Image (cartoon, rainbow, N blue to C red; front, side, top):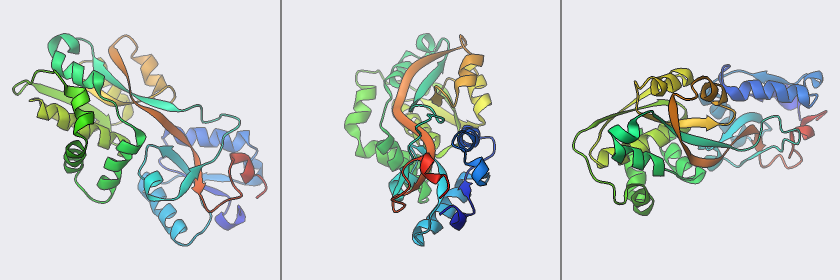
Length: 266
């Protein structure tokens, strides 16, 4: 099987946390000595390669993370990681600037209550991937899930045109969550602006008060370094999504490959 795919794991951007974890995994499972290598590309290139492989029923190994629309669109599965190189499940937290509770208590309450599931997030991501504008996809999801949205906004007074700034990392998951919560806050009367940034400036923007909040804090591993760097300069409102996961994934038709260990000498 390895020779069919040139002993290659199809990865994403070089700087992504999952790439360094995958390099560690290749070493930990003795795959480096089997000539396995990690190919750097981009999320778009990786999913395009995955799409072609699945259409042809060819074997492929990719860097995968959930929530992501590829797990909704394609029949793929995570490989077991008995050595726990990729760590346990992550959660995505909502992080706000110091003083938000006093300045904008209504926004603080809605942000504090905001939570949803990987499946719900994937719904929005899939629409955006299919070409729907992220703001429109968010509005459609809000319309379809009134009870969930009400659990975030119930009893919260509406405001009139107060400004609010959210920053986010432009990952598919964060494009979905940031657009949904921004739209909910707009419906509460806030004038919300959202700005995409690299991961470090997102943390810096909230820590310095340049932004009010972010809902893209993958923890404990992905954003762990920034959490430590800026500790004491922000308020963590806890998880808005639980059960996030990273690891290596393959199509389900690769029935004899269920663990990273199974790649050895294959």
